[in-house]
Image (cartoon, rainbow, N blue to C red):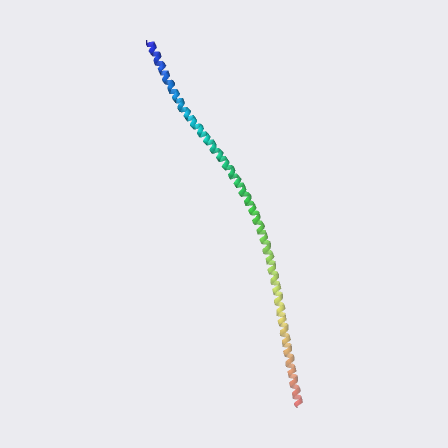
Length: 140
């Protein structure tokens, strides 16, 4: 009977160990399922990160192109402004030269009129003097 009860105890121990193993397998299965779902979430997160990185790289490339275009446009406008500034300075210098010539002409005209007026005054004074001398000579 001992042999039978020892067999039964061993069978019972094996059954308990088997039940514990099955329980542990169920726990491990749940953990593996959780890890699998976490892995899927991680893969989705990595895919989203790759997509965001790609979009950021595209945006950076677009910003670089825009910056290059803006730089070229700014350089063109600066060059054009510089040409206009040089042209304006030339026009100002030409205008100043014209104003100097006009001033010289005006001054010369004033001097000529002044000389003519002085000449006319001198002639009038000579005539008056001559008339005065004629009157004296006629009265004498």
